[in-house]
Structure formats: structure tokens, C-alpha cells
Image 1 (cartoon, rainbow, N blue to C red):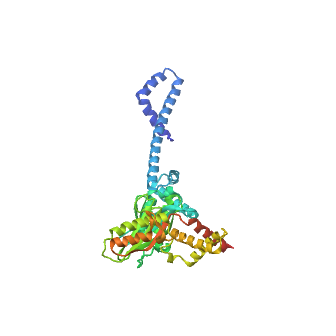
Image 2 (cartoon, one colour; image 1 turned 30 degrees about the horizontal axis):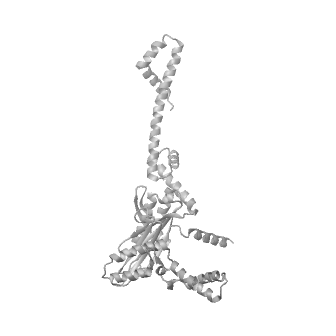
Image 3 (cartoon, rainbow, N blue to C red; image 1 turned 135 degrees about the vertical axis):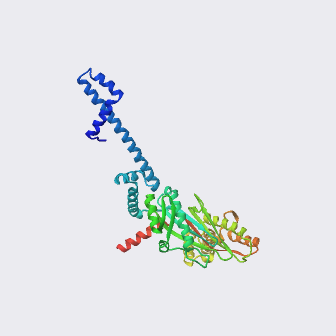
Length: 384
């Protein structure tokens, strides 16, 4: 800390008037030239102590600003300090600078693979919405800001999603969601933002690529329920794997308690068993033909007669249906019966036919690598 000549003179006068200095001068007067050296040394020590105290206070103030800005933004401490230094320790300007840099870096990171993240779900009396919000690491997925935004997006999809008449899972297009606005009330993300802006701001705060990948809504029929299950759930409404299904009941006057319970168990089964189709009738002809060809090639490799090969193929097709068709699968909670049998028993218990209208199973990150490979191939083909 530099002091002017007048300041030094004032300090020198104060120093000489102190008791300790008076003692030094009584000694100094008997020692001639040496007294001047001692005087200069003592005053130098006083100035250094004064400067050290000021420096300590300044460092304490700076640490307080770093802590405050870190709490506001969740940005890395290195970036927080750098922004404060660039903005001459003005915390408001430093916060703006961090956001500007964060948005720029978020744009640069947008091409990086984001296959981690969370599924977020929101429900009301008539329907359920689920969205997938991706990031690069599970560390970010555990962050409370990330989880807050994911749940906010699910609630937005539920409240603003288009109405539907059927119980099918309806995908919401990215363009549809991009037009909607979020009202955020998190300490580190607040105010009204359009969906793309909120996602970019979240990416800027997290320091990773963040993407809203997909979203669906499912509505119940007039006499039915929507049943759900979330696996690996860090808190209510969040998880890494989701199972949803609509159960349709013929009699609207029955007690739905048992229907809801069994529906939740079947949703858990869907997460565990990974069905692809609801019934055998819904398996496409192309899929069936492709599977038959694969099984026939495997059977022919055994060298058995043609008639035996056909029997082998039919037996393996039955096994295939048990693996991929929900109604043909063995029930995970009781593998002595099929899911179809579970529904038959439920219908008898409640006194009304109960059937599954539709179902969907989602898992964080599924298919992302193949999607990116397809995009790369498309770009390469266009460039050729």
C-alpha cells in the first residue's frame, strides 16, 4: 500500500508522540547517528503493520464477494474470481460477465454427447407428462438446480400440453415446447424464461451440454387410471427409468383402488421386463419376418431336417413373443402367470373388464449413440 509524503509525516509525528517512541528517543539521543537508523527502522515497522492490516481486510472483503457470487451462480470458484477481478470486484457486473461467458461456452458445448440426466414426471387427475432432460455427467444430474428445472419442465408439459382424446402416449414436438414459457423461482434461476433460454442458462450454470430431448403426455379414459413407476428416483417425480400405462375400465362406477394398485405393479413390471409391444397383433409384419429369418438361419445351422427346423422356428417365435410382448410376458411379481392372467384376475375382482389401453417405457440416454451415428451419416451423405 503506497502512502504520500504528508501521510508519512503525520504517521511519523503520531509515532514519536507514543510512549514507546519516547523511550526510543531517550536512547537515541545518547547514540548519535545510530538513533536515526533506529528511528527509520521503527517507523518502517509501523508502516508495514498498517499496510498488512489494510491488506488483510481487503482480502477478507474479496473472499466474501467470491462466496456471494459463488452462491448466486454455482459457477466454479476459479471462474467466479476471474470475473470479479475483470470487473474490479463489482459483484453485479461480475454476475453479468459470468452469464455472458456461460451462454457462450454453453453454445460451444452443444455438440458434446449428453447421455446422462433425468426423467421428470408430473400428474393431475386426468393425465401424466414425462420429459427427459439430458446432461453429460450424473454429477450434474444430482444438482438441485438441474432437478428443479427438470420438474418445472414436466409441470409445464402437463399444464400446457395439447388436449387428447385417446389414451395413447402423445409425443410433444420440440418446436411446441420451445414456444412455451417457464416461471422459475429457484434462488439461482428465477423469472420468466422461454424453454430454450432456460435450458441454455442451465447449461451455462452447470458448465455442461444440457438438452431437453423428448417429452410425452398420456391421458386416461373417462373410467380409468394412469399408472406410473419411476426407478432410481432421487426425489418424488424424478428417476432414470419410467414406466407408464393407461388402464381402461368398462364400468365407471367401480372402486378404482385395486385397479390403481395393480396398475402401479404393472408399471414396475414394464420397467423391469422392457416390453416393446402390447399384444402380438401389434408386432409389425416386417419385424416378424425379420425375426423368423434370423431364427430359421440359426435352426438350419443345426443340420436337422426341414420339418424339425420349422418346429424349432415356431417354438423360438413363441419365446420371442414372451420376451417382447407385454401381454405374453411372465409377470415379474409372480412368474407363474402372464400379465394377461393378472388382468383377467383383476377384472374378476372388481367386477368389470379391465384392459391396458397403452404403455410406454423410457430410460435416460437410450438410443442417443445410434441417433448421433445416424445424424453423422446424414451429414456425411449431404457433404458427398
